[in-house]
Every structure is written in structure tokens, then in C-alpha cells.
Length: 300
Ligand code: GLU
Image 1: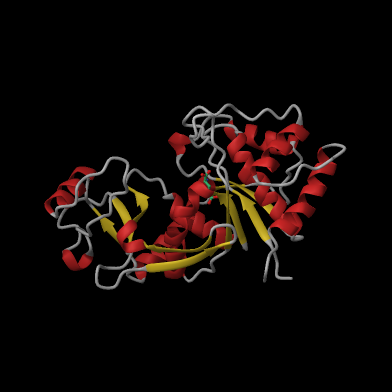
Image 2 (image 1 turned 120 degrees about the vertical axis):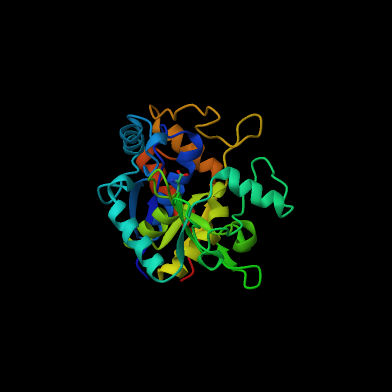
């Protein structure tokens, strides 16, 4: 069998909650079911969103549940040189360019083009600072952007997900030229995740369905950088009583790991695993990886 390497990549904006455990458990089960390695990567690229102590708490919670990474966790905050090297390659190849537009300028140009501003909707960058349109035109650079096709030659990205099946996205229309690094310094998640998945040799990305929408643009970046594309499996989202996705931002309580078996059982139920008559957490994990293997077989 090909080498399997999986990962759980939490952003340390707070401790694990019931929803993030589902993604962590699924990636662990998939790695175990396939005789692979399982890594943890702390996605702390965005300094201001990193909560003090959250990383330690996440690692402690995983440990209490017996979800122990096969290598010491890596921290994106320490990997800036790698992201810079990737950006340099994209710039040298003409795939990335500096952008000097403020949000307000982008909105104004979109409005002039007749594109209504929609609250919460992704703003598709109109390409104002593309080199062929004169570049920065004397403005200071505020961000680096990756080119993402044109109206005449759009990037239409088909991809396959083990749970969601065949997917496709017109990345040019839905996303546009995406930000790789912002003016105030931080690296964009999209660049960091693509660089790290490749460097860590990740064969399989197993993560929450809320991230599925990022996959096509990540594949586009992988193509621009000449990097392999991992297989993906996006897990079902856990919703609260009001039907909203559980998240730190809408107040999901931290995961209680004082009864590991109960926490694992709940996460397993959210993943659609059968109820398992387990004698304890280690027994549950062993049974669950066997059940997972038959539920989500990997076809190489
Ligand atoms: N750090 C991202 C998050 O916590 C997950 C990234 C990924 O799995 O690709 O939402």
C-alpha cells in the first residue's frame, strides 16, 4: 500500500470542542485504519487569533483521548521562511503579484462594474493591480496575490472527495486572485496549508466539511507550485440545538475529556460509526478503526 500520512491541523483560537474533535478523530481513525502515520500541525499563522494557552490545551485534550501524534507537532508560526520561499517561486514564475488595493477600493471598483456588495459573500478581486493593467500604479503594496485565471480562460477545478463525491468549482469566478500574504505580515492559510501538506508528505486530508470550499483553490495553488494533491475526506459538521455549526466563535463549550470513552463515543456517533460495545477508551479506539476501515475503504 502507498504510504499514508494524515494530519489534524487545528487553529489554536481556543480549546477543542465537540465539533473539532470529530475532525481530529476522523483523521486519526483514517490513519490508523490504513496503517499510516498521524501528525498534528498547529495552524497559528494568524497571531491575533491565537488564544494564549490554547495549543497546550488542545494537545492535552488529544492526549487524554489517546489521540497521540506520531511526531512532535509542528507550528506554522515557525515556518515563515518556507512560505516566503514558496511566494518567491510564485513571483519568479509570474504566478503572483503585489496588490495595493484597500477593501474600500476593491468595493468601489466592483460597484463600478455593477457587482453588488453582498454581506458575508466572498469579494472576487477585480484584478486592478495585475501587471498587465499597470501593476501597483504607484500605490504601496498591501498584499501578494496569486493569479487565478481570467474570464476568457477560467480555472475550472474538478476534484473528488471520498465522502462528498465528485465536486467542481470555477475558482476564477468564485474566488479570483487570492491573497497569499497580507500587508500587515501574516501568511494566508491557503498558502501555509498547501506548503505544509506537501512538505510533511500528507497523503490524506481529513477535515471538517466547512473547509471543503477551500479545496479547489488549494489544488490550484498546488498546481502553480508543482506540488502533489492529497486525497480528501470532509467530515459531517456537528450542529448545535439551533442547527448552527459548532464553533469557537459561536460559543461552543470546551470539550470535556474527563470521560474519554464518552467523548469518543459522541464523536464516533457524529461520524456515523455504529455503537460499539467497548470495555474502555483503548478498546473503543481499536474497534472504531476497524469499523472506520469498512465504512471508508481507501482505494489506491
Ligand atoms: N486550521 C484549520 C481550522 O482549524 C484547518 C485546516 C485544514 O485542516 O486544512 O479550521
